[in-house]
Image 1 (cartoon, rainbow, N blue to C red):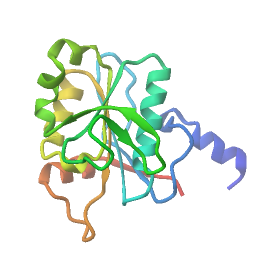
Image 2: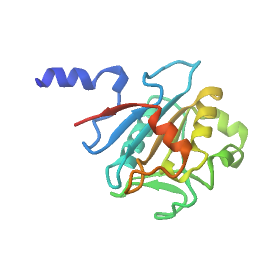
Image 3: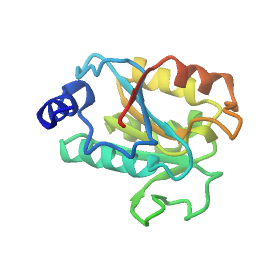
Image 4: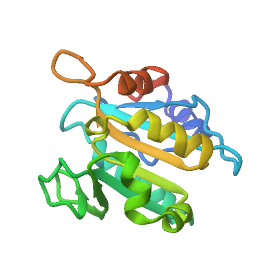
Length: 179
């Protein structure tokens, strides 16, 4: 493929991510079309195997949203205590402050309804830890009009999803990959 054509494809507004992720990283967009509207929420899913750069891609996307003037917040599971509970940390040491919660249904109460309403974008790291991921994303995007960006594993070593709702979330999407 000629270089100019590839650049045009990557700069397409449907795929307006920072530099492409590693080849092993799969990106899925639940809406299949990015709707930049105050009337719609969005759900973006970054999935792939361990050490594929999912958290790095998530932090890059969240920082991009912040740089564009949107109010952002990061959430992770309180089960993930590898690097502490107050930050999302990549394997190469990049950090971003976050809230650690046992499940997403308690997130709004944890930070307060007024504070929750101030955020435009919610980043969720290690989405596979949340059994209520699908329900939270539906409510946050459809009712609260939030942009949700999730990073998580695409299954276990046998490609098994630990819950039906995560399977629905991941498989109701249009698959986009960069090779």
